[in-house]
Length: 277
Image 1 (cartoon, rainbow, N blue to C red):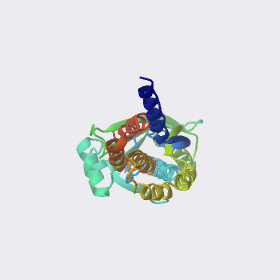
Image 2 (image 1 turned 30 degrees about the vertical axis):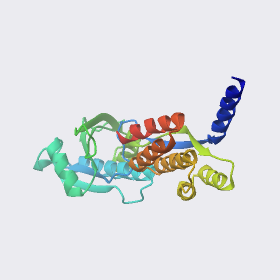
Image 3 (image 1 turned 180 degrees about the vertical axis):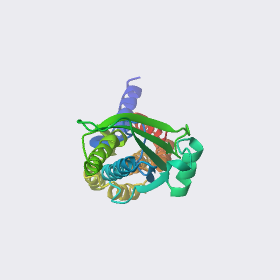
């Protein structure tokens, strides 16, 4: 009886020694905008509407341009990456789903914003009241619906030149709900007490995910299923950090198949599923 107890105790210690250590890494992660729309990685176009009123045309053109530039800056896609187009409102109603899908195809975009601005009153001492409507359609949205955002704004100007400047300021302002939100999150990296694992850990700390992944791929060459599963889990984390959520899921499946790391795996899988929605 005593011998059996000792054997079980030794086995428990050996199993514990095979488990990886965990290192927490804190990162700022991009999340969908306050509007609920996700723009990251998509080809985006902004389309302004023009008509017979030249003042409204000036407002819409400048507002759309500033709106597009604000998105480019926020998502780091570079100047000119958000396409700018114009349609004549006299040629029909462009706000319906079929029309927006047609515009999306014509512009070669994944997501289109259609901006319409109308004067909602006369220009007074405080400026010109304007109604702003934005229609958005995302080809990757599973709900396949047109999203409509509307509001009013008094452009504090008494000349057309001043209106153009105020419209640009408003365009930047209305882009804010579509800009990404950033939240600090904690992720765990599995490691062991060897130089290779520490080297990969240092690269991960420096957010050099590709460099860390190269080392973890080397560490797959082992018969130790726990270490192999740990490397596969870490590769899944790296893929997730680089925005390839489907590849991250594939590596996490491999890790679970070899020797699942329950707490680590379950937490990462929930995050992957949330990103794939």
